[in-house]
Length: 140
Image (cartoon, rainbow, N blue to C red):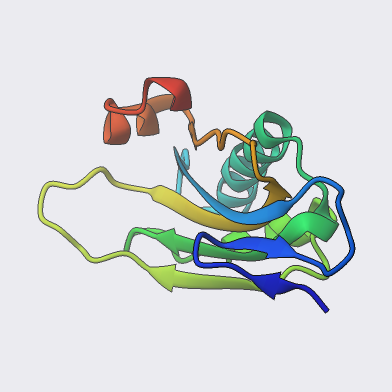
C-alpha cells in the first residue's frame, strides 16, 4: 500500500514510476430553466468540459460535489454525471447559500481526482457562469 506525503503525493515502496497526487477542479454552468432536461444538459456540458480539459477517466476520480442555487430543484445534477458513466464515483448534491443578488440557476461542481504530480488542473466555467470567476482566465 502506498503512503501519502505532506504535499499529497502517493508513493509506493520500490516503485520508481510517475507519482500521482490528489487534485481538485472547480466549475460552474447556468441552466436554461428549472426543468430536468435543462439541468441535465447543463451538468453534462460542464462535466464533459472538466473531463476533456483534464484528460480524466472515471477510475482516477475520487469524488464529486455538486451545488445548485435554490431556484434549481427539478433534478439532481448527479444524474447527468451517472449518465456520463461515473457510476463508481461518489457523487453528492447540495444547496448553495442564497446570497442576495447572486447569479440564478447555477450548478457548481468540485471534482477530486488523481493525476501525475506535474498535471496542471483546468477549471471550467461555461457560458454566463464565466462571470463568476473572471480571475481564472484559464477557466474560460
